[in-house]
Image (cartoon, rainbow, N blue to C red):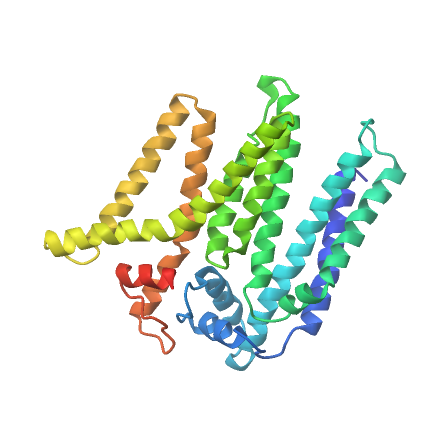
Length: 343
């Protein structure tokens, strides 16, 4: 079999082992800490404590919909179990990519010994992480940390895929090129956007992603290394301190202007802001593609898909307006949502 096929099969074996263990050891009902609240909000799409976890809730609702009410807690716990086994899967594939790079150093050929060593490295590393104390506990209960770990694992795996494809892309003739490695950057931005609706832990992968790009694109020296570090921290700060809290605040400012000053119906300002933002991004994508500004096109596309992922927080307002039994902070309006996100 080819290396790719062996790598894929071994990875899915790792996933299967982790899945069986986690499902067999998963909590049958709620456990301590926030699990009861997360299971409740997921099962009936209610509004939990700030800043909320709407994407986790939606997926939890999907899982609990396939069970009877008395088994809803176990199904949400099973969501964490599958998220954790998927984390182990992508960790395995990340480890084999690193091991393959070391094995091929100085040689372009992989013999059977190399392949066995690479698969063994990935298997031992992934299994060791799968059965660590904290990770196993998160894998068997209805908490957000398991899914947050999954998003962290998949975005780091994706940047390693980008690194591999850059080499392939640059080493073939222009007319034979298929696809663009930058699609992995856009995919990463979308995953980060979705992860905001689960937990902010995933944002800590941004500096690691930045350094993978740095070492691929530039020769090491202290100045550029420090510059890359500063850029990665600034990017992290922009996402956490500007995009997440400030965009809803700007939308709320439009809403107040249109409703209080112009006397227009509720939500007019919010819809105007959304249309303005979408139109600006669409024009930016069109303009940068037309002018063949690849870097700016990738940045605008990445920002766009990040916002699409972040839009899962719309569910908080929608469900709060339905007045569910659990409706913490009652974020029914944009102003209330801004306050909710900052709590």
